[in-house]
Image 1 (cartoon, rainbow, N blue to C red):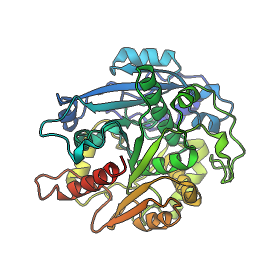
Image 2: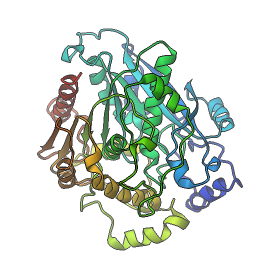
Image 3: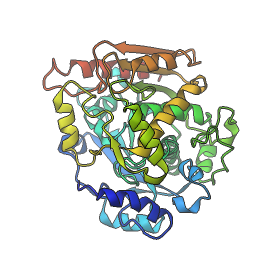
Image 4: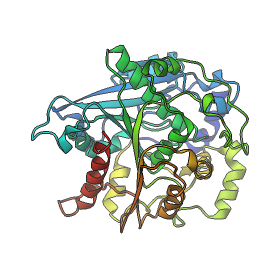
Length: 426
């Protein structure tokens, strides 16, 4: 996918926020781009159905402060989509800000029968992607969840995939749990509209997606009422309470009553979460200092290499990543990097509020995120149903598709543990 001029990337957000410039395609070419070849097996699978859908949020310019915009979850419209050029035009007419996601479901009993007894039937699993990726990077693994009976929901987080935003530009990580909440509540609203009941969901994510799942669980209180949840989705957001440290996050005393209720979460399975950066991937201190000075004047500037070359010992992993034009191939943007650091600090400070059944796995050889940080966070989790496992020798990408059965054994172990943990809680 063609890269923008770096100077224009610095100027454009300011012009757009003041109304002096309207971005013609708020997904920057990602919305209609052809599917990556390795995803065709899933897309063309006759044994499952899939639907693309998008939920619209109010444009940033309609909020009095940036924080309220980043934290917003009010759904003003939602619809099934076909990923066409015409939908970009109509999307702009509705304000130009949306979160896109896809829903996958087995048509019936799969060939060879259900795995895990089909215990996932009637339950959802949502798969949240990591930094620089997008939802369908999970495509090689989706069939395993479908064969166990789960309906699979795959969002594109803001600024990734078919969702709107300059590619990988995250001025605040509040955008991420808000988007997850939007997708899950829109699924409930759509189910109710078609006479279906609210399903319990397993929230799952890797790396930055793991951070998103964890922060979502502490930020949004549980609810058992599908009707109230659906009504809440269309309610205007409350004015956020005062912030702690001026970082764009509510302080630790924020009352749960100030938040919208979440769907029924049956549990969370989290892989290599972005809780603490590995020493091999954290930028030099001088780079961080420069970044902090630039954040408010050049937040979209690509500056640091971050995890490049640190996610796997198999070069094919990054080769496939760079061959996929919908992935973000540039350097880590200033605002995105600093938002990640602030988000990790905030998550660690509030870990005791993550009260849900949970299993976390991490690789001992992860050079992107630290398994030591994950162990520290795990020790603070309050729920009695919690498990952690450190996979010896695994790197950051824990579900690398192998070239043969022996090479794929590591991925199969992860998927088997993942499905076993969830089906036991169905």
